[in-house]
Image (cartoon, rainbow, N blue to C red; front, side, top):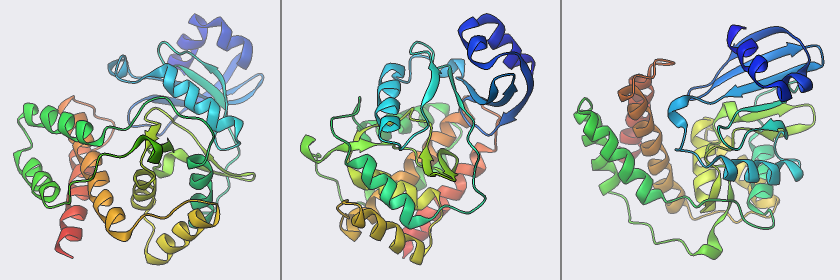
Length: 282
């Protein structure tokens, strides 16, 4: 509560939206500090970005992409967004208890990929992997993990440079915590890493992080196709799945190297590396 009060005390524009705070609870968040807030004017979610993320995320681009998705009914619109530091306030929605419906999520992603216009930013996957590999290597504590990841990546077919016409508005971080199940349907949050990207990235990442099994993956891709999405070839999905796990594992090792203690990041990375190795053996 002290952190929330401090933020509201120094940002009168937020206080005017929320009214006096009554209760606050810490919500899940690996990078940012996220709070559920009950105040005089309703229930809210307040995101306070970590200081270390300053300059690493294009906040103006995030805001533009978020607003574009929100206008289409795909995302939760912000009540307040600071394009300098990423401080954000939004209404807290009532969530349904049911698990994510794979077909429904597929349709939502197809609608996102089919939005008119373009998102800010472009996913540079080779550059992202190279930067993460360098950062983790410099940390000097994860030689075994790096060896496993690199051996798998080297065995993949080198992807062709995507044509700009084949890039689509993408969320790029469709983990379960960013997919809200509401009475009005699925709504997406956390557009920090959103950009123009090959559609196969969102598809592979969503199936992985939401733990869709065989029937779930089938329903997910069928939902995507039914809403106008073009399903990639199985080999492209398979290779991108490995790259998604590589990015997640390297990001986790980077967080561990930075001393982020919000979760057991080495264990988070190990689980993804084991999944990559098992998939490579098959």
